[in-house]
Image 1: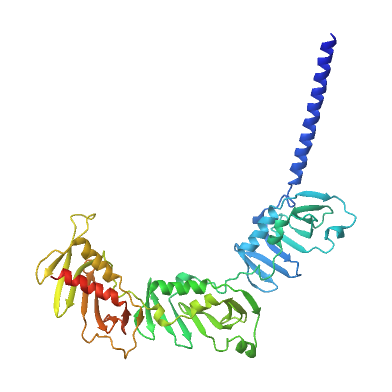
Image 2: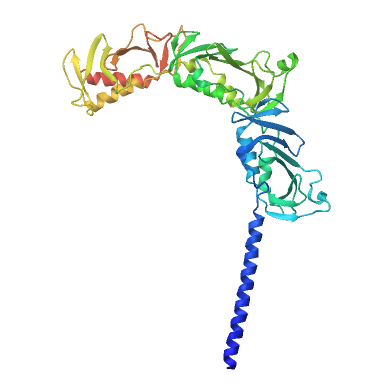
Length: 448
């Protein structure tokens, strides 16, 4: 009987301990849950329409959302940084309380909240939450910041990592792009420099050079220049305006380069000035007073000469589009034609049709055509240079795209140098002499 009583007593103790453990665990869970409460529980980032940020340097910046984009309204009116402004809005809506430090502090000075280091006020649409976040000092152990919501007495802890999101300067919160425009509307561009300039024209997707000479243009290089202008990022804002003396000091009275994009009848222009530091230069938009600094490497991309935008490929054809070749060497012309394959999946076969019929090695001849197509201009020769083109060592006439288009290129040699010329391109291209030598050797094999 006594054993039964002991067993019952033990059971009662165990049940009691289990109940106590459950109580403690549930309280801990409640505590954990409350420690992860949101400081602004009913706030959605999409509802925020205005932000005012005061950073630890005392700068105050206001941004408003307009048509889904953030615009800076103070201290200057300009485009805002969508990434940084949206980052602040998202952080406010998701701001977790790590722990409640003091429900009713006698003096918030102990937490650095008498004069907060950072303040972020937000306004939402009608009926939606508005408020302000006040951030004080770091905790002694680090990792957390003292904070409170304006209008509440309690002091809470938030993660120290939030500092980099909320503590933003006016420069941080403005869009760093110097220019914005619709790239699809670009119809041309011109560049003026001390060393000379050039102008390119765009029709559909094709670029051509119209000044200083009429020539084929390198489409990828021209598109690259447009992207380079669009991608220009300010490294700093020097000032909202400049006197004539300051413009001279910045090298903007006589810019080292002026890049003008044509948007139909409109123009947008960037002026590049002198050095601002080891890796920066001064710049401005032609019709705006602001002076900026930009990376020197970005400025160098805007200061390339006309030759950089000429098309370097001597042939418009590609190896797979060519269907007829006329090769003239040592006064003799040899004609090769590609016969179509049996079906659309079969490669065609090159055959010599004149002056006598022959069938060159299929793989070698295809490689030869590909090598011709890859010959590019290294540079352009001076008009007085000796090029050997008065007596060409090779003339290549190509028909491609089923005979709808054609190329004609003459090649000359002068000493150890090699040159080439197209009748529809002004000037003479200097080329890699080994490529010409390799072509001549291949022709000797195919014309035996």
